[in-house]
Image (cartoon, rainbow, N blue to C red):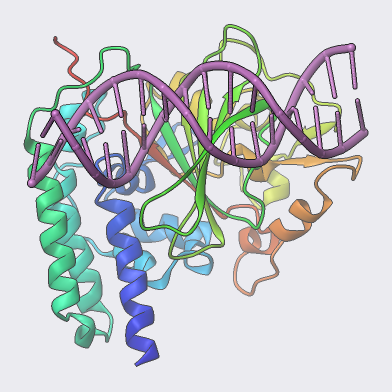
Amino acid sequence: MEKIEETKAENSMVNSTFSDQNWTGLGLQGILDMPCEGGTINQKASLGFNMDMFGIQDYCDPSLFDLLRTPVMPPHPVVSESPEIINTPATPNSLSVSSSSTEANDEQQTKTTAEEQEQEQEQEKAKKLLKPKKKNPKRATEPRFAFMTRSEVDHLDDGYRWRKYGQKAVKNSPFPRSYYRCTTPSCGVKKRVERSSDDRSIVVTTYEGTHTHPCPVTPRGNIAIMPESLGFSGNISTSSFVHPQPPYQQFQQQHHQQPYFHNPTPSLRFSTTNSSFPTFQERQFRPSSSSLLRDNGLLQDMIVPSQERKEPKEE
DNA sequence: CGCATTTGACCTGCGC
DNA sequence: GCGCAGGTCAAATGCG
C-alpha cells in the first residue's frame, strides 16, 4: 500500500514537472542535447548514456529516471527559439512518456483511476496550452532556464548576488517559492527557487533573463572547479567552467541558446574560505558507488531550459 | 548604517 | 464579475 502511494507520488512528480508548458519536452531535449567538445552529443542516441554518465539515477526519482530513459520521445526534439515549436511536442507526448514509464516499471498496478485522473488533468492542460492565450506584453520574452538540483539548501550560490523580493506559497506544494532578483542595477535577471513537492531534496531554480554584467567577485572567494577534477575527460571546455557567467548563459552564447544537460554553476562553485557554505559543499559531495562524477557529487543538477510561457510575440 | 530578508498587500491574468 | 493563483511591491524587521 505504501509502495503504491509512493509510486503515485513519484509519477505525480513526473507529470507535474514535465507536463508543464515550461518543462515538457524541453527537459527531455536538454537531456538529449549535451554539450561536449566540438558540439553536442547526438541527442537521440545518447540519452541513456548521458544519464548514466551524469549519474542521474542516483538523485533522480526512479520513475523520472525511467521516464527520461524511455525512448518515447517527440519525433524531432528540435530545439527552437520559437516557443510555439518548443511547446508543440510538449504536452501530449509528455503524457505518453509518463505512462510508458509506469509501464516500464513493474508498477502497472499503480495505473489506477488516480492516474487516469492525472492524465485527464494533463490533457486539460494540453488543451489549455493549445489555446492562444493573451499574455501581458510587459512580460519579458527573456529566456528561462531551470535547474533541478539535489540540495538541502534552497538558495544555491551561483556567483551572482541576489536579493530576495518575494515568497509565495505554491499550490499543491508544501514548499514556498522564493523570488530573487539580481542586485546589480540595470540587470533585471530574476530567479525563482522552489523545492519539488514530491522530492524535497530537489531544488528547482529557474533563471529568467540574461545578466548584463560579469559575475561579481564574491567575498567568499569562490572558485570554479576544473572539469578534470570533476572526472571529466575533457569533453567540456574548460572555459565553460571558469567563465564568470552561469552555464546556461554560456551555452546560450556558445550554442545558440540551445538547451543542454549540464552541471549548473551552483554545484561548481565552492567556497575556498570555508566561510559561508561549508555544509552546502559537504552536502554536494555524496559518496556513491559507480561513477567518478557521482563520487564528487557534483553532477547532480539538471538544467532544463524553460521557455517563457507562450508569449504573443507577433502581437 | 547599509543591505538583505520577511511578509502582507496589491496587481495581473485566467477560468468559470 | 468573481475567485484563484502567480508574481511583485514595499514597509517593517533583522543582521553584520
